[in-house]
Structure formats: C-alpha cells, structure tokens
Amino acid sequence: MKKKRYFGRGVMFLLCLIFAVIFLLPTVLTITNSFMEESEIKSNYGMIFGASGGGYVSEKVNLKFIPDKVTLKQYMTGLITTPDYLLKFWNSIKLTVPIVIFQIVIASVAAYSFTRWRGKVRSFLFFFYVILMLMPYQVTLVPNYLISQKLNILNTVWAIILPGIFAPFSVFLLTKFMRRIPYSLIEAAMTDGASEARIFFSICLPQCRSAIFSIAILVFVDYWNMVEQPVVLLENAEMQPLSVFLSSINQSEIGLAFAMATVYMIPSILIFLKGEAYLVEGIAHSGSVKG
Amino acid sequence: MEKKLKSAKLKTKLLDYFRSVCFLFPSLAGVLVFFIAPFIVVVYYSLIDNVTDGSFVGLYNFTKLFSNYAFRLAAKNTLLFSATAVPAAVILAIVLALMLECRIPLKSYFRTFFLSPMMVPVASIVLIWQVLFNKYGTVNEIMLLFGKEQIDWLNSEYCRLVVVLLFLWKNLGYNMILFMAAISNIPKELLEVADVEGASGLYKFFQIKLRYLSPTILFVTILSLINSFKIYREVYQLCGAYPYEGLYTLQHFMNNTFSSLDYQKLSAAAVIMAIAMVIIIGLLFIVENAFGKDVEG
Image 1: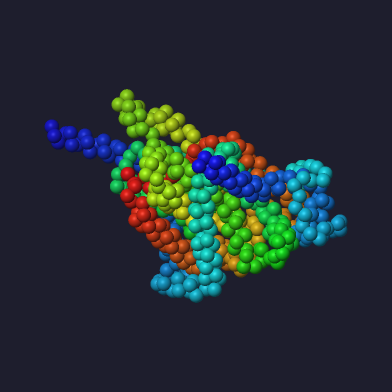
Image 2: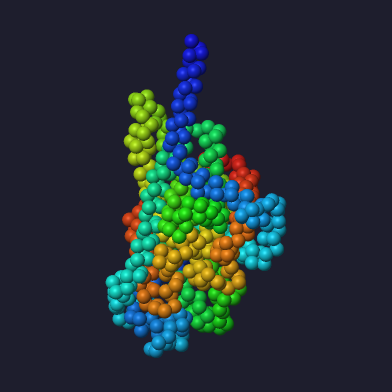
C-alpha cells in the first residue's frame, strides 16, 4: 500500500518536471539565444526568418541552448547605437506606469465606497462594473475610439492612458479584498469619531497593502503586454510601445530581436521574482465572481 | 420627539449617500465618460444608416453584418478557438493543481515555474515559437524522427492548435493558482470521512472536490473566456496583421473595420459581441447554480 503511494508520487513528480521544462523552455531559450553572435543565429534560424546578405545558413533549424560564443554586441546596438528601441521601451513605460498608478488610486477610493456603503443602487452599480469588466476589447475599443475622437486625443498617449485608468478591473478586485476587512475595525474607528478619510487612510489602505501590490502587478502585466489598444488608437508608429514594435523587427535582424525581446521581459521578470508571494495571494483571493 | 429622531436618521442617511457618492465619483465619472456614454452612442450608431444625417434603419446593420463573409469567418474562428481553449485551460489547470497537491518535493518551485509564463511578455517569446513551429522548425524535426510528415504549422489548419498551445502556456499557471486555493478550502473532515467510509479516489474527486470547486470553475471559465478574446495579441505577434485564414479573429475584423472607419459595421459588431458576452455569462451562472447549489453556504 505504502509502496504504491510512493510510486504514484514519483510519477507525479516526473510529470511535473516535464511540464516545468515545457513552461520554462521558451523563456530560457530566448534569453540564452540573445547572447549568440549574429552569424551563429543566422546559421541556426536563418531559413525561418528569411535572412539575407551572405553568411552560412544551415539547411535545418538548429535549436541551441548554449551559444558557441557569448557576445553582447546586439545589446550594444539595441541600447546604445540605435536609440530607436530604447525609445520604444520608453513608450511602453510611459503608457504602462501612469495607468498602473492612477488605476489603483482611483480604484481604491471607489472600492472603499463599495465596501463602506451598501444598498440596492450601489449593489446594482457594482454589478454593472462586473459586467463592464467582463467585456472584451472588441466591445470597449469602439466606445474608447469614439470618445478619443470627440476629445481630440486620438493618436496621443492619452487615448490609451485615460480609458486604462478607469478600467473597472481593479475596482472589482479591491472591493473584494476590502470587504474581507472585519467591519468591527471600521465601527470602532467610527465610534472614536474618525472621519471617513481617516478610516480610509489609516484602516482600509494599510489592511489592503498586499492586495494593492498584487493588483498593481496584474494590471502592469496586462498593459505591458498590450497590443489591441495601440494598434487601434495610435496610428503614429513612433509612439508604439515595444510590445507592438518587437514583432516588426523579427525579419531583418534576428540577433537584435532576441536581445530586445530579452530586455523587454526584464521588468516583468524582476517584478515577478520580487512579488511572487503577493501575486499568488492576490490571484488566490480573487476567487469567485460572486460575493 | 419621534419626528426629530426620524429627521436625524434621514439626515445621516442622506449624509451617507453623499459621502459614498464622493468616494465613488472619480471612478464613476471616468467609467461614464469613457465607456458608458460612448457605448450608448455606439448602440445608436448601430441603428442608423450613416453618422452625419442618419435615419433609423432598424436591424439593417445587423443583418448586413451577418451576411458579411469576413465577420462570419472571424466569429467562427473566435468561437472555435474559445470552445477548445477555454475547456482545456480549465481542465488542465485542475489537473496541474491536483498534481501539486500530491505533496511532491519542490512543490513551491514548480508553482513558480508554472506561473512564470504569465509574466513573460508574449512579444518576447514569439521568436522561439516561430522557431519551434516553422515548417522547417524544431517540432517538425522531432516529428521526422518518429517518421511523421512535416506540417506547416502556422499556415495550415494546424495553426489553431499552435495558438491554443500558446494560450495554455500563458494562462494555465494563473488558473492553477485559483484552483489550488479552492482545493485548500475544501473541508478536510469531509475527505477524511470519505476515506473512513472507503470511498474511491474517483468518488472523492467527482462527488466532493468537484462540487466544492464549482464556483471556482465558473470563475476560471469566465476569466479564460475573457482571455481567449485577447488571443489577437498572440496571433498578431506570431503572424502579423494578416494571418492564415484560420487565425482571422474578431479583433482582426474590428481592426480592419477601424482602418476603413465604417462606424455602422463597427457599432453593430460591438453591440452583437456585448449581447453575446452577457448571454454566455448568464448561461454559465445558471449552470453553476444548478450544479453547486447544495454546497454553498
């Protein structure tokens, strides 16, 4: 009986190991390949990306983990000699960071309102936020486009930032977190004569600190990855974030593309390594749609 | 005396209302300006014949949309994708969560590994996916070893499979965390009683675990459904704005309509999708209510 159980666990472990390799492979390969010399990359993958301009191109694809010779040349090109990529990276930051910060600020205030005061009208409003949150971009982009046109902010960063700030996602999630705060805490503060602002700042916010971190991470990942909004709302190629621009450098300079792809994942990987515990807690508590 | 009390009560009630509106105002105002008000305009646009001096045409724009080949193709592809990717994302996530629950060594590392793809921007790893799934790519090399024929993954009917795999790679970790949390909330006594009574593993899974998981299953299904509508990102980065026919999604259709600025078509499509979303989610809620009602407290 016991032997059987150990055997089962061994099989599980092996399965997990296989899954882990599959999950890690694309990321690890991208990072290691970014240190390959341009000629090596070309000979390995040249036929796929249609590389031209001489040099040996292998007939078969040659997927390799470890570069023959480690080089930082394409990082130098991407980050120092041609400021184009750095500019796109800066575009990504310019779009993502304001959205994350202001979405959280506005959402935490709104979530306080949904937590502190209940009632028919307000629970209907909350339900309305949930419905809006569930709408795909294909639905929300059309109204976003119309209003941006009306306000004359089409083709500026504001066309993406402003709707992003008011996206209902973090209102929903933060409300769910705040409603877990024991009501006796708020009641005690009220009998002590604390103002609403005081209750909000000294009780609700500190209690929700980890929730705020985890929501900030989730919002960041979503907008760091964005493609739909810039493609529709920003016609100017100069203003596109790196997430859109990366797919257009695939063909010509593969080595550079690998290096820039690696640069692009650095912020989110750093955040992941630092904030994994928050993230897991945040996801786990987002639980069910009801309640 | 009583009157005074009543008016005082009314006063605090009004004051409460005022305060709640104050806190809600920034968010509500933004939502109204950027989502609700323009959406009402969208609904209006979907019912008139042109934007400048439109007259009411009823459902004409909708019937026209449904007879549009590109829209039908996009709708079909999106439905097909969601119908395969969403159930797979739910079921495989449960499997992963149950596997990690088996007290295997290095559990927390595996959790990190499984979750990591969600943090990696898709734009960063599409190069490797192209290497893997190209006609001359690594996957085909491996298939050749087993004597299978080469497949042009991205330019044939198989492209859907590639995108489903990419979707699963990205989303399974997140869903798995949700299920792990739900599994740890199942009352241990219940499972112990089942053990004492000699229940089989299958019985425990279907009769106990699955019932307690049903609200989470609903949540993960809805979440995956929303994410499945975002698959345009992956397709755009993998295959560009004009992919193989099988990957032409609703977002591609919307983008092309945006560039021709056909407001009627855009509005009708947005309204149809909003209605479809509400119906689908409503149905999911009904199913979940029927299935999991005896365990909810």
